[in-house]
Amino acid sequence: MTEGIREGKGEPIRNLDIRGIMQYHNCKYPCLMIDHCEEIIPGKYARAVKNFTYNEWFFPGHFEDDPNVPSSVQLEAMSQTLLMTFLTIPGYEKAKTACLRINNVEFKRKIIPGDRLVLTAKLRTFRGGVAVGTVEGHVGGQLACRSDYVMGIPEEIERYKPRSIGDKE
Image (cartoon, rainbow, N blue to C red; front, side, top):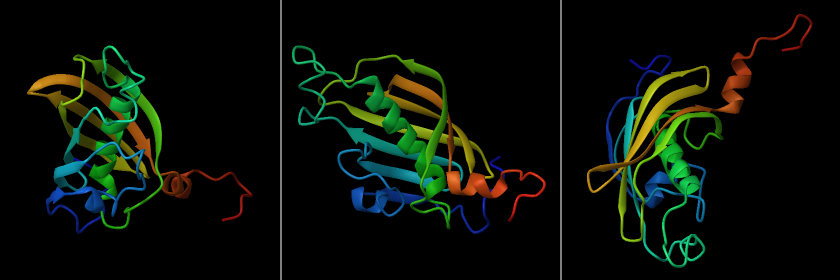
């Protein structure tokens, strides 16, 4: 059960195109690494898709003779999918976020031009501006990548940060 979620959330959001994603997300081209959100349950779950074509800016350099998706791009796509689990909660739209920790990272399969990466994010907790969750990416039903994340909303974290005696509010 996700704790600390604001009331009034929970209705599934389906079929968000890129413009719909940008209503919640601060990232824009060329940094936005998800193309479509198939389903989101705010405060709980998100399923997004990234379609890789040879036109991606990184393929010619990674690598000309064997183009594949860099691990950093996979990590960013996974983190952006997790962000959609809590940026869709009313009041958090377009909040500035920070990645606080990445654990248990696994890259299981090479992702190449023409692959469709389906990303599933599950939010375990969200309290005091800190979100903890897991994301898996599958290509053709096979696990391609996975990771555990701790993400934060710095402005929200600051509100809950303990103050020293004598600090002004």
